[in-house]
Picture 1 (tube, one colour):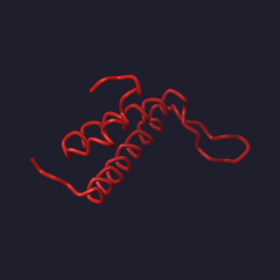
Picture 2 (cartoon, rainbow, N blue to C red):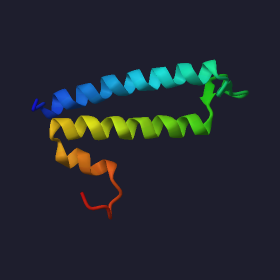
Picture 3 (cartoon, rainbow, N blue to C red):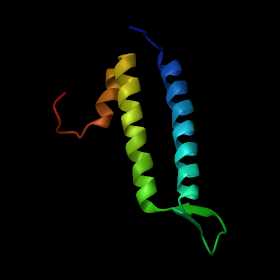
Picture 4 (cartoon, helix red, strand yellow):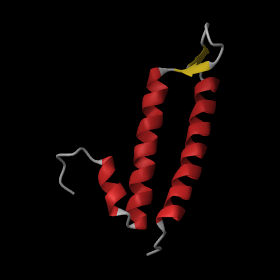
Amino acid sequence: MLKLSPAETEALVKRDTERWSRAIRQAACASNRSFLHPLNKEYVMDPVMLQRLDIAQVVQNWALWRDAGDWERFKTVWAPATAI
């Protein structure tokens, strides 16, 4: 099993999170799930798309931290009362 340092794990999480975020934002724009906010003129994502992004990030972190053996971070993807 590949053992990554905490810094390497963090770099991978950041890189992959940025990729997922970009892909989901592009999909949201393509499917008209985002809109231009009338006051600050920035694109705002639909709340459903934000929830999907959050779920994708949890799943991604779960797999990465499990494979890296980073058990302290792995525990953070579960509810506090959940037994692992």
